[in-house]
Image (cartoon, rainbow, N blue to C red; front, side):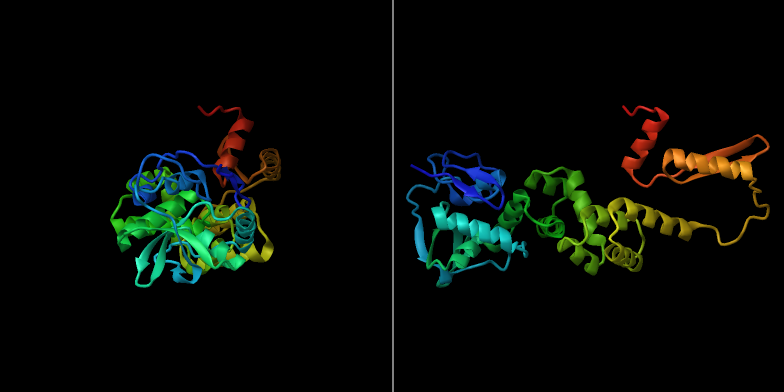
Length: 322
């Protein structure tokens, strides 16, 4: 009887049984076969489905010394949360490694194709051996499999995810749409992720570390130049700004930058009544409003700094969006 394995770090339960290959010719192709059952892999359902394809006829799971298994230099994922690894190690201590690591031979050693989290957790436990399946694969194949598996697991940080898409596109000369299909994402998701790589390296590091959210990063991208973007990021960290406050900050900076340096030849005279009406409009709408009035004519300019704020204003005006 195959026992269920619960990955505490991700809250996903997997059990033995037939699995549909999620990566096309990916890990399932390396594992081979289409029938039978093996314990499912630890990880998200998409990646687990790929790794849990049964071994080909005649294949055997081998146990090899853990010090002969090494991580791949091609691995695009760099950060592994210590707490998540400890939780996975606790689960393995209780039930063992139910799904063998997938490796390829490198001289007298074995290089990982899939299963680095399990390897690291086993190392934490001081295990002397790990179960493996040995496969033949060249560097491009291994890189593609690692990228797709990691991106489908959805446990990369935002910068790692963006770098994974970029590497997949560049290495295999794919269009964004093609890369999106490979990892089961929309083209918009891939495009938005790639935009994060336009940020200065220092700002990317803060996003990677979780000090800045993706929401902060997207707002910062509204500024031109690495200098302004870094300055905005530093201001966010210093003052603890939330995303809405960051939107206001960036909008103010953009407005200051685009404001004319010369004064109009005929400045508009504002009387106290117009100024009072403008203040009341701002209080009612909860955003910056500019009221211009002259001899019965003028305009009202209402500012918004995000799609959510526009939607809120439209609701106030009673405008329905189809």
